[in-house]
Length: 608
Image (cartoon, rainbow, N blue to C red; front, side, top):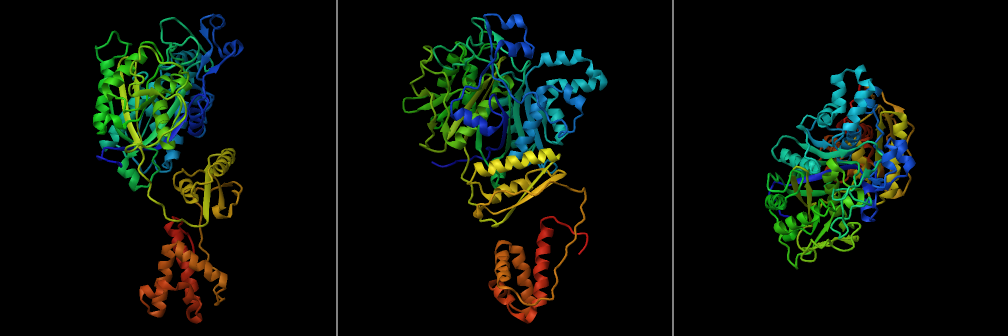
């Protein structure tokens, strides 16, 4: 069975993220597939230096572990045109999320087209009461006024502030549904696209808590783990460990993405959101019926059979109450049988529970698993929780890296996120359709880079060179196109002329500070020489093959000069150039054709 589409599919065309132990999406995947436990354990000295109460640190119940975000305190304020004081006051979550949004747009290839596209933003952050308290006590907010400071400190301005700074003109909604926030954001972004409210939609979430290096007090019977490990679905699972992180995805209607030849990581087939209401023991408790119903609805919207879903990225908190309820809900919704081998996993075993960013961390993991056709291991699983009697009856815990083999139909996965308070979300994704074969591009390509500062440009050069060496199979044409069209131009610029077939290293030019409105002149060479060198003819023939518009101009010139048909003129341009009859005119035609091609590329001359 192949792909079957109903017109309601949404493509995932861009990814960005910062997670414990991983500052990039590539690093995140490497950690996931290699089973890296990214929870960091701190010394007493580190915690006290970070501002944790020394008495709490020395307590026997204090667990010195957290999913630490290395880049959580850094921010390129100048890039986003914030003053140093504004950056100092801004919630760290907003800082991280600004950068993730920009990186996601660049990954999708649309950072240069925010003016032309209607882009929506759906995102949420975690409550950050300590930051609000610190900022309020600092007195620095008085320098810009309480109202202006509030807009930098309050997490509920997250989407609005970023939409303003990046000129995003689609819907901008800040969402909060506790642990399910960012997966709910994915659902709402997809709905906005399908409703025609935007051309592109950004969705995700962020959590950065203070102090960055910290732990927590373990209390028996509560949701926090006694040993700093989340052991989802294991008999020894006793809770979660907190963590910081951020993730963003760029979404687009599938047919639009196919038509525009966008990169497609995966396809959202369907999604659903609901709330438990009162059908549970208390406000913070999970509900089997609520979770089962949201999963059933997502499957119905996706129009896929439950048995076609081979992997489920679970909420997977590792709590004695949450795990049995989640597995019971999955059994009710998916009704697995022995013949339906559905793998289960939880990214919380790797990076901890990221609160508002938990759902997007799970979503990106599942997208990467489909893209790479591998199921990463869910960690710390030795024997199933005795209350999980569905394990072995159609479901199994994927505790080692496994190649994801296609059995029937496209690879499909489900992702769950359940929030305190009862807002549940489930999303069904599947592998991307096969990309159309690209035509051969030019042998030589121009790699163009730009940045706001010379230092940033040097870092950019290093990043591109590292990518170049790490991806020897990358199409040079695609790399050049993305850097030319998908990146916003800035003042400091550098170029490299590249030919992959010559296996040459990238050699970038020195940085040049571009003028705001550079003056361009087209200068034709001397036409005194009427004869053509053999090498020139070969290059002209090649140029006509690679640039149809150049060939069209030359063919038109030959028709005018020789009164030939279009077919006759186009067949042997190089051969006819050897004839001295119209040498000067044809030389002029050639350079006219080249100048015309530059105009098509947007180079407008002020003089000729």
